[in-house]
Length: 409
Image (cartoon, rainbow, N blue to C red; front, side):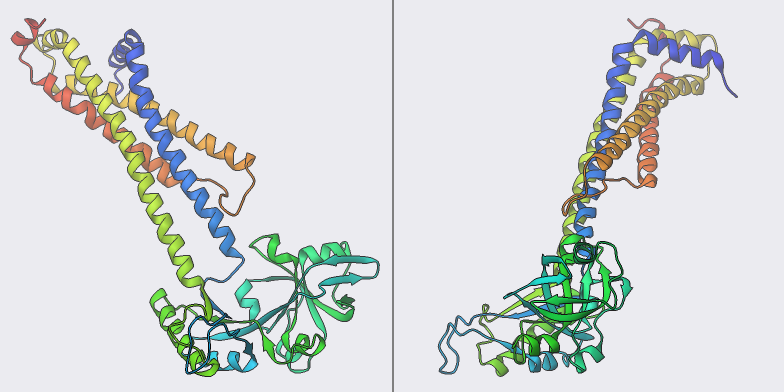
């Protein structure tokens, strides 16, 4: 039952000790505010990095030839290694490899034109499987397919930025553009969740590029999709790649410069482990700050009990039960803690919302946010802790004998 007299007494006590109540509440509000802001900032960093990964698969290896740095079977160091279509075929047969893609870039003349529109963009020669590597989303038409590769078709898929620059919103599929002066038919337009960097590209069949741009059967790199392989399995695949190519291209398997292998599985795992550690560190700091506030509440409650010892003695002499005394102090503690915790929660969430709207998303920070359930749970934990903080001095007060309390000065 709601006891109006008791609440009036609580508010009267708070009003008489405004500064003390403010400082106590501030320490609690600051604790929850810092926890919310720190957690939100941590998620903002994580979202920024995850956004960068959205544009690429996280389960592939990219293998690039390098320059030998060690002699091998009579061959001197300093040799430039080169890949051909055969290297891709061999690597695609390795266990754990679900699919593979050839890739190289046309650097000599990468000017694209459509009627009177011109632009300089990146021309990537790839096989159809490369669509999985970049996680592309087609907005119209299709991507390069196997028939394009087999028949050496002059077809091209455009990134959204390229499409906007050349076609200005007009229909592009079926039209012809010129790549380095050579006509190619547009078969599709794609978007990329990773951002505009990859949308300044166009993709053409690698076999067509080898013929048109006199590349022979050379390719620059091989991308290997490993399905759901874990980090340890990806390292096993790396070793097999090195051993396989060592015998084919004649280099020492221990030569670290002979091959450059980019492991997205390991890279993604490292980032996730890093952010897990950051979240743990943030929780430790935030909870430590909250605990400091709770200790402050407990100390203030002890002071309140000490100041009101004689009053408590009079109450007990008049027949007040221990629970009535405990509940009075507990309610005051919970009231201060709940109100201050709520203020800290609102201010923390409000600040995150302002930062989210004011700060544009970047590769390193995007959408700072806090899980609503976590925010509510932290506040409830704070209220519970406030109750415990008030219970200890309240129990002590309830155990004071009336005679002793009345003689207390």
